[in-house]
Length: 103
Image (cartoon, rainbow, N blue to C red; front, side, top):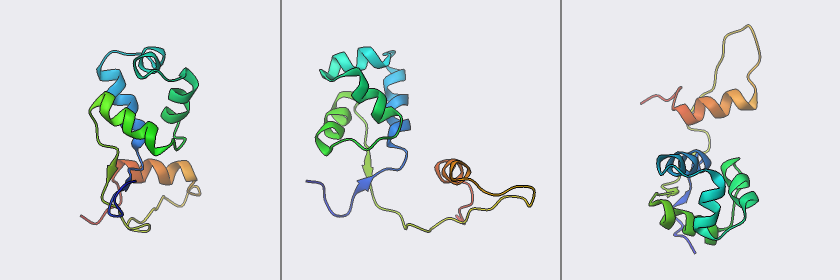
């Protein structure tokens, strides 16, 4: 079980995809290297939360970190111009890009 001070990074699926791509593997090759089903890889790369066991396996296979220090749930403000409303996709894109932080 993971330490209480670490949580799954919100961009875990992007990290996995980029690490896989950097090795020159397509999803099918990656699944074969891990001895997992292709649809499991597809689901993870689309953002579905896999089991901790699969995440640990992926971390080892790709030599990446998918867990980190937790961030506050409301630590960034999301804003857009008055021309349209903010969608969930807009908020996620802004959160993942680090925009809107006061740092």
